Length: 535
Ligand SMILES: [Zn+2]
Image 1 (cartoon, rainbow, N blue to C red):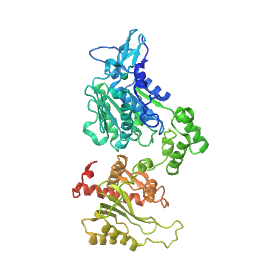
Image 2: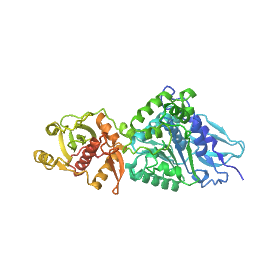
Image 3: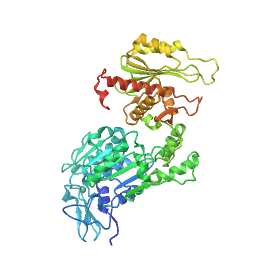
Image 4: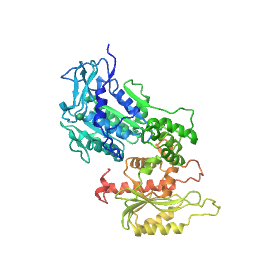
């Protein structure tokens, strides 16, 4: 019986063809880190009992693993690694082509590449060959994430020997010789998902859940791959075990044909302790650290981790400490929210907007949030919070709130305003007669099912980059303060504890404003091209 052997020609092909995509080293041959080498070595491990039939290559079943899962901390270099993997699956010897006799070779010249690469097989090692028509889908929750990989892939092709084989890379997709192609897809591309795919890199699958539709995306792609004899490669940060993500399911699955690589730091080290945290970072970044000849600066990782710890310890521990921790019940991933920052396109007088309003009298804050119809940009119109050293007498200055609403209607083209009328029913009624009952609506946030649906739409929009915000500190603080709470109808948000000074009213307003925007768009009243992009 022959033992399982790695398709070594595939690994050699990568180092001969893939180049560093950016930075000062751009265009130099890509040197694989040991952890990347380890991943590829296993991904391309050929079963000792694989049989070669020339007319009908065995494809995926020739390999020990039908998919691979790599879990690693932020900035470890998973992007360039995935780009290299794509190059190999696109035009390199990614398939098993039988067992070599001594003297046989893989010669790039036979495959339309003039780089001069030439691999001499040893007797009885697996031979490689390229796909005839590879179809590759780079898949992630948001275009921003697919762009991360695609943005590394294009220069990797353009600045190295692969430019000879793939002369043109497009903004949107890449045509491959022989009719294959490389695309990027997100959940919004339902119709194209999983069609005849031969290789699917799935990125950040620790965020792929049932709720945001990505679990279904993964299933569709796995089915498509099974039909074509293709394989998937999953990369991610450590996940929140409360979310049952695709990464978690794949990691916990009893299937033996999933290769899993997840190097977890020693459990006796605490992430809260600065000295131990440094040890954790040293452990999980290892060879990728500058001090070890890599690209990662230990101090800047600490700075970023420390920054995130202030808002969400569990998140920081997952992202930089490479640990699966439930911890925090934060509703919206602070990292995701931070990524939605858009300082480029400020609000202008006359912009079509919607407004969300949440009022209180004493305990909570009263707030107004606007949302631009065109691009879903959120911004704060007003916030009235009791001062920190609150004396019993403080009350919301109703006159000021009133004046601010009137101002907003004058300054912007307000399409719709949703108000939680609790305590403010009279005033909301007056706004409705003043500004129009087709514009100002009561929207009771205590209607659990309606609220669950609105929150879910907002959450998905944030994840899929269909909304942005102007970086307002109060709005960001309230969003970070919002904790998740399971109810019979689904997920709602709450403060970290009753009477907590950590307010969430701006988050509620933002959800109402975004909900109003959705309804305005659905009613078809405001027709702007960009508006429909994500719907
Ligand atoms: Zn070549």
